Amino acid sequence: LPESVLQEADARTGQGTSVIIVMVDHTVSGLLVFEDTLRDSAPEAIANLNRAGIRTVIVTGDNRGATLRVAEEIGVSEIYTEMMPEEKVEIVRRLQEEGCRVAFVGDGVNDGPALATADVGVAMGHAGTDVAIETADVVLLSDELLKLPQIIGTSQKALRTIRQNLAFAVGVL
Image (cartoon, rainbow, N blue to C red; front, side):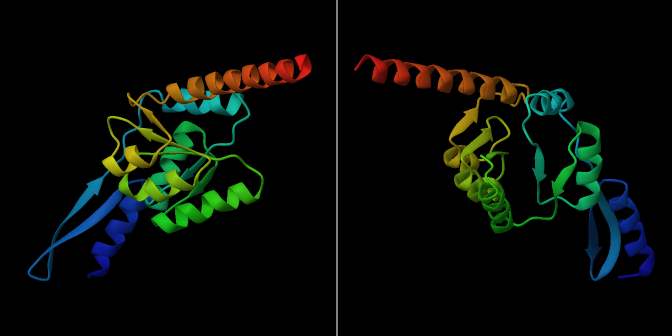
């Protein structure tokens, strides 16, 4: 490829976009430039999770530049980029070995193995692929990220109630 094309692709990638070089008959005919758009609720959802003491991590197949841009906008400091499905699984396992309980949120085919490996797999309903939806433990019927902190809070309350009821039941026996 011509150096000028590589430089342009690198410059665009550095700006937080994904680039595909289009060639016709072995000649560069253009660049397709893609930019992720954030859900409006993403920064608030991440802030709510962080306030609750939940470590947030981005594990994605996307390029580093695009992921850094998104991470900065939503307030996530730990990222893993350009990950293949098996690498996502390795990261989930490593976090589990560190003693973390892992909830993996995904919507794509490449997220399926990590969703299955995580302690809790959460698929984003409307945007989710069939593989993600079938593999996940929890499926959000809407794509509202603000539901994540709400689900976690509800789950924690339910677990507290179960533990209290078990303690009471054992105490009565």
